[in-house]
Amino acid sequence: MADSFDRAGSDWEALRAEAVEVARHAYAPYSHYAVGAAATADDGRLLVGCNVENAAYGVVLCAECGVVSSLHATGGGRLTHVVCVNGDGDVIMPCGRCRQLLWENGGATLEVLTPRGVRRMDEVLPDAFGPADLGAVDGE
Image 1 (cartoon, rainbow, N blue to C red):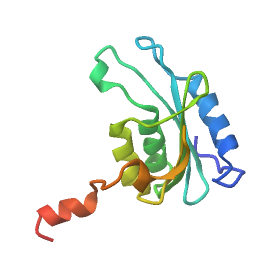
Image 2 (cartoon, one colour):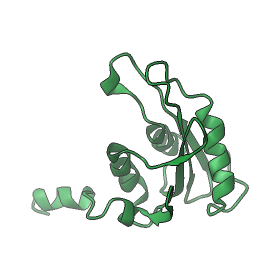
Image 3 (tube, helix red, strand yellow):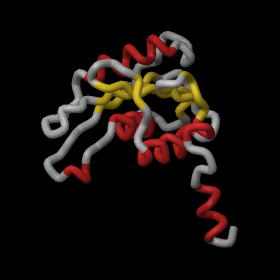
């Protein structure tokens, strides 16, 4: 979804409601664990994604992958706020792989609604590896 989000990105209940709605569209025939994610971009766009499983379990697409794909497919930018929920609507933490993906597309200041409240990405993924680390390897 690339619609502009009518509410401020810090309206966590509204963002959570969007994640709950998109979780209803998850394709989870193997785990039966639906996940929805909703985020705002720095220009106010609302971005959503749901998990899409595959019989080859290792190639499952997480809900956060859908959000990041939507971010780039609708013009790019940076993520500012994100929330993930399970099929029951409970706020859940992004998995490790997705924390890395969110870091790269939102950075240290990306706010994440977690089961323990709102946290910045640098709290969720301290000492993160990012593009600057690649430059160090290349000698830049």
